[in-house]
Length: 365
Image (tube, rainbow, N blue to C red):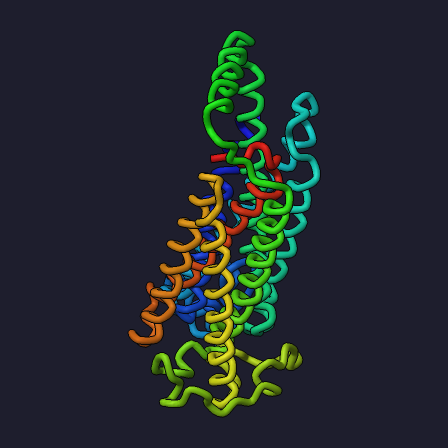
């Protein structure tokens, strides 16, 4: 169990790095730094010797070797492969360690399947030349992997805490029960009622769904190179309601054989995508902000703390998003915007785990 928890935590941290670094690779125009998969110009590393570069460019004449871009892409692949191995290790532990009944059995193998699918999306990202639907799906898959790793870690961590409580001496239990009884006779109850807890659960799940929709819009904006389609803020080209072309902007499938590097849409379609992303940001901010306000008014100290964390993570993401437009898409800040989205996912998944796995009697101040 200890080994499983440790690997789970390392995989969780590595997954966050893979998601953020993957965004950095895409924003640095290095997504096609290696035109083949899983190698790079037929190598496990990046061809750098003169004869290797010459042979690579003869094999891929449409894609000259750019070592700085190729190394970014390969480092991302190395990190993703390491993450996959860690997830496979957890799945194997869950099978062979049958004595430990607290280990999750199904979720590790679902993660293995998800990582395999992620690998396929990574391959299609290259072979289908940055197709927006595939690249956005790759982002979604990465954040889904992050969410499930976090949910699993929180679950095994809770199991460990419960086991530690069960192992304490009965004498300590008696003293705690006496202290609790004494407190209950002098202090007002602070338990969350079933109706309030049910409302919080639905609100938290709904907020996570809204965030997922906004992440899709953000991914669609980035993969269609529409991040600077509206170079000003809060207006777009000086207009509050710019001209849009929704039908062209949200065509999900345009067939194969198209190189999507630097985008294929005209400016009007890109403005449409960017504008919808801004509208989504407003909706997401309102939904998460209202959820945080409700939590801040809760009688539960833990719920109130979650409210503070949601407000802070949301404010950070809004500031980064506005700054990204104002400063004309600096690379590190744009990558940080993806990191902010991942941070919001972590916060909302943690909140949902807490609300949906805790008994209402445990959510007290």
